[in-house]
Length: 280
Image (cartoon, rainbow, N blue to C red; front, side, top):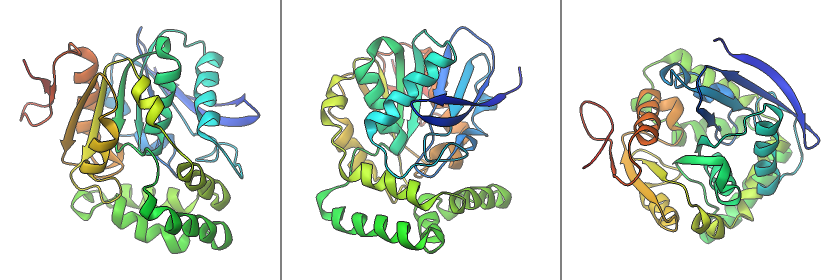
């Protein structure tokens, strides 16, 4: 079944979404800060047999732009989108970077709605030593736009060794430049006030946390430190960067499928030449 792309009005904002595939189990895919549902374009075809939902979060992609937002807003949006599309059963939920925080908070607050959780490049807040610089960056983006920032961010989030598709890189950069500066800065403001510790400790579903070996934004050490609060957690560092669904879509799809299909009590091995597997 082809993708159904449409808009929903929820919680006072218009959100663009794509719903496709068939199957009893739904997978929800959330994008990174400044991203869009297209982040997952190369992952979705590899998730055959599932019903797949992805959407542009408020302030991002083609969804309605905002001047401010909170984690509570983003969590509420996810619940409202699921309700509007009559997705009532527990979902497999995957998020990357800032949306990993959204996914984690949703799983913690609505445990009956999430059967398993995949968190990539988890953004659990801004460390104290970077708060002043991040606040200044948010102000600069609001006042001067994103062009001066995008290429530097591309170097950090899209390592050159993963740039084997020039068109894909141009698409990624173009989508980044198309962001609304005020909305983009609002995500930084949210991260500056974010404390995810209680939500992480409250997660009860099996959780796979992935860190990228080449992630210059959220290092494996930092991701592991933040993720250790999750009770039922498997952690892996994989050969990828910050925005894993864009950089290594095949590996991401395989990880989601392997973690979702095999017993949660077994650790996941992503080093196998035959793809990810649980270790017995």
